[in-house]
Figure 1 (spheres, rainbow, N blue to C red):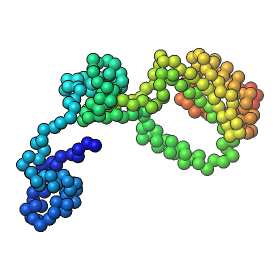
Figure 2: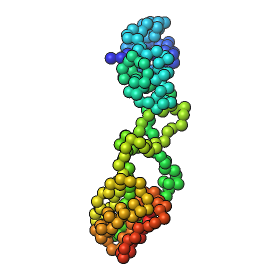
Figure 3: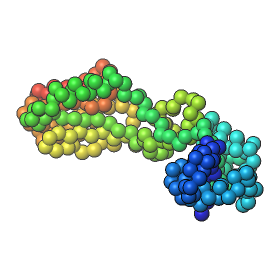
Figure 4: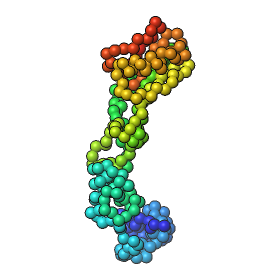
Length: 255
């Protein structure tokens, strides 16, 4: 079990004043007043001159100050995790030692990367107004089909990236990574069902998007939306010049 934190100069001065003003007080009552343990206060009262001067015992630090600075620099500048730092530097220590070094640095914090793009107050207000204007919709939702694409990166989880942040610098924004492999899928659903999930194996342009809609969405339109459907693309607005032909059935499109 580790030792408690030593009395600060302010706490020692407070104990001295209480001892002079209330000489009848016991060490337990003084300890309760200064919010410290009875053993700590009594130890100070027995030998106030030498309090905190006892030489420290125990195992010395494995890393020196130069190595501590290197560890902090690799974490804050190169954005390496403790295991990567241990493999990059000639350190004769454990992974836990590297973690302790980073945790003890007052300039470093283990934080999550902020989402990119970040939601601005304008975005939040627009979403709130949309919810207020549509929260009373009932049967209208049965006429709407929602669709969207999602890319799953295989080199790490999306949006759950943590790093050692230097509080003297600006926070980093999470950005999508490429090169580690990925899988992109497309899907759509309505109030009464969903269409099969499409695995996209090539770059999406106007023609390939029409093929996806024709193969996966149009055959399921009657099962997904009642009466005249409204197709709502839930991802970013597209700028394709060619639009899919939906046949004889009327359908509204929203991107």
